[in-house]
Length: 149
Image (tube, rainbow, N blue to C red):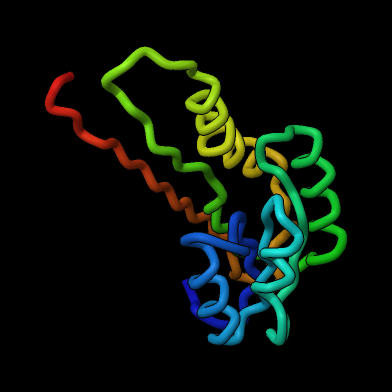
């Protein structure tokens, strides 16, 4: 993958582990679109950056993803790199019975969100002949070990 001259979409690029790559790719000469659920963190990330844009989207909402993909195709027809980075990481206590709603929310955000986004193809045809779109996935999983399991 070439490291400059791309139009990149980084989900979850406004905070956490997505923010620094978004800023670095932008510094290398790429147009970068960051997404997330919180407009304040997105605006903070793009403040003072050239060719960096922010769009609010919740990857847990299938209808929002469809509308988002349509918007991105219309506004950024040269988009050629998608980095699926948005996700949720929660500390889970595996030593006790618990409500699984948090785990279910993590599965929706971390697994279904990227699948839905990829299915909606928020990018058009490659900008130049010979170019291809790139799809990258970022995932973070952590499990706290308990000796008494």
